[in-house]
Image (cartoon, rainbow, N blue to C red; front, side, top):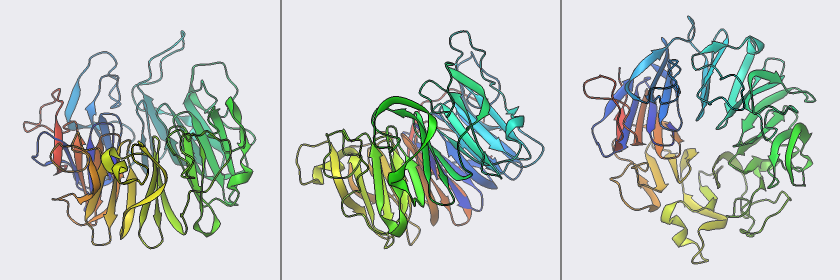
Length: 435
């Protein structure tokens, strides 16, 4: 399941994608035979057995169709000319997108700055990444690593998030990151990047104003990879806007970066720190989900614990009244097999396949008629047995055991007539996506 800033889509095992928003409860099938779905701020794309489909806001060419000046929204999925072969992987950011197939093709909606040439608004082959094996994207930059574990990044470069010393506002050609051992994973935040090696080393670069690189110090930017001693042995890592968390050996969790709203989960919310504390009471973690200023961990027994910025009204249950954050982890759900965190809400799949969500629901992102925030997880009605769930800023999606994708939240993504039209609706009821 995936969630963007204003829309929600879900993918089931049969490969059907469904999307929805809060104001229009009618289900809409966006795509069949989908293998993967990703959404961002008002637009989404699906990787199918026949190629790539994109829909939603195309104001700045986000859909890869070369548009750059005419503001419009595409309500019905449009096939994107990426490659003759079926893409293997897809990543979608607010202003950057890439697909992996026999080659890597990327496009961008970033406007040119300071006389720099604009980034391509149509899928363009990136020859430097012909052997790419995995991609990760942030709001305005993306990184890849190849079969040998070499890392390359492109996009905005102002905070050193590309791992390259540069005075350019943006770099449109993926540039190898020097000084790194072979990596097996890469994650990106708003303006920082971390890579993990097979031996559990974590190397980070980019913005470090709040200590988000986990290197024990703070500075405006660190444009070269620096190893984090505190995260040695990491098995997984996830980044938010200005903080991050990692699962260490044994399932312990360590967090780093901004702590102004309890992002580190150490009970000291509101107090900055360059240290790397371990959130209180988190043991045997098997999954992390981090977004914005929020973090959640799924434990071995299926319990979900969250900390950081409040999920709508959920913070009312916090022992310290009046706070707008959890400065230590609290239990929010049990029996979970999949977890996703959006900007202001969270969703999970329970062992029986039901999807539950809590937090902000102003756009129907929790799958209920537009209302105030949900203090406790509530079942999203109408979604068949789900396997995974995805969450964005104001959207949610679930992928079912049959391969269908169901979505709900902000921005309608399919029209009744099938004619492209500008839309601005919301769906609280999940929609199955069809062509």
